[in-house]
Length: 116
Image (cartoon, rainbow, N blue to C red; front, side):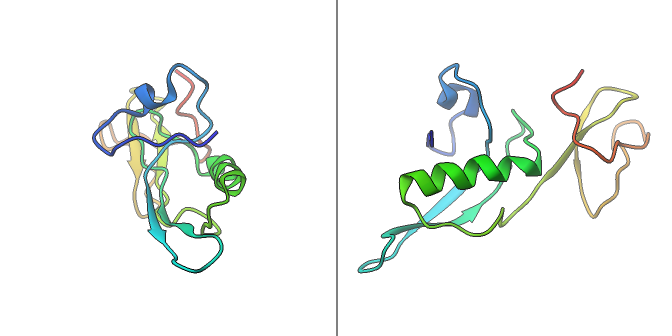
């Protein structure tokens, strides 16, 4: 199911207690006279509450397809999240630099945010 909420809201509240397969931000544009009439122009996995893996794109694509909304082939702005195994902090990996910004430990190559 595709659930939408204003940008100022929390993804946790939008989920209403249901399991979350993906989270992030999405921008829609209208395509008057075209099918589909709406298109997801920009899609990201930017959610510091859920820190979803890039693999969550599959759930986003399926939800948009079921809703009949056009979409890109993948996240237009992909954010890589990793939890530091040394200090436990969640990091946004930039420029493929897999080093914790809090303690300088190496970050894992695989997504691990849901583990503590």
